[in-house]
Length: 462
Ligand code: AMP
Image (cartoon, rainbow, N blue to C red; front, side, top):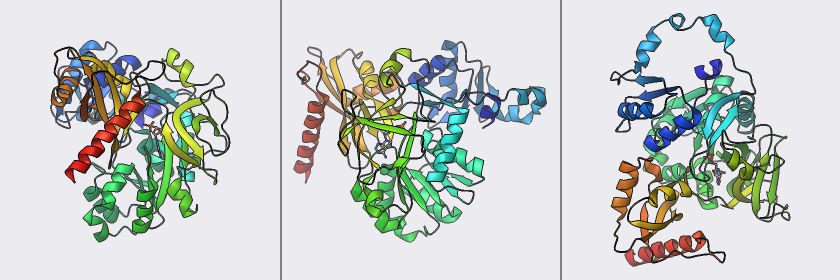
């Protein structure tokens, strides 16, 4: 929040990000400072920061939360102990107030092609994003929000999230994790009214023995998004918790759709909502960019007051990610429900949605193909009952080479040092990868094949 006041731009990195992501993002955004806890989920963040700082000339400052620091780093506590005036006169800080149309926060794309894309959200658009979603999602100054997912994500930060809560004077309860035990206890104790969650979290709550024993009488809204919530668990939410369910189709690039309290139950259960702003423009188009017939499935295009017109420093990618007249191609396949709301039916973009956390297939494939045992690779989604999807690596090996899932994940995690949630959770070895009519790898065929194998294994086990 202080950064926003003085026009310093936070890059919304995740606690799961490791050397690969942090190094790339620091370089791409020319980050000047890095704030880290000394220990980051068992990883020595100080060592990581030292290594990356040596490679990124712009990175001048590293502030550490905790007692231990590395060479040339500053303890955050020491910095806060000094009066601000020792570093900068207050009057100068006030003069730094940024212009509303400049970037406020660099969000990260949920994985499209290759490396993550940086999303420049401006002060005016991000402010509107938060307040318009507070209006749609029924957050006001009496709300109590429980945030258990990484706070830098667009959803807990700005939809309506921490930003709207602070702007409106609502209260925020920060939880160390979204797990059922912690969250249910906090909802009861803090009289929480509003919770953002991904479907995997909701499923884990529904099955938890604590659910029946907890007083959830304060809860007004369980807002579910980030991945598709199927109608069956959606109905279970209504049965177990009453009319608290709200679905959201959101994206860090902008467009936000919510179902609204007061919508008929079937609309809340079956759809992912409608836009928050009267100025949001939506098109649903076929592969040639023509509007589909009403109710038919097509790709969702979005343009509006808080949807970006381009990624940061990504000129070539922007030429395909946006239409000539400025619509963002979401890569999501949707149809319009008779109520007017949108229903997500699939996607065109090549990613794996692991419980709301997005994995770019191409990013992981580029690393895997550099492994000495691998000749060719495709990373595809495989179904998972809780997370929705997990990543499966389908590989063709070089002659005589061998590879196990353990070796592959060791290589990606320890040598290429990518975030753990991106590691494939299954490995399939093929003689050759199936091809489409035009000779590209057929990911649809691979997905079907992996799904069949999983089904066969499940049948054998039962
Ligand atoms: P992110 O920017 O990480 O929030 O990812 C945005 C993407 O998540 C969207 O473009 C969708 O592909 C997916 N997504 C978000 N909310 C939903 C939802 N309610 N149902 C299905 N997919 C969703």
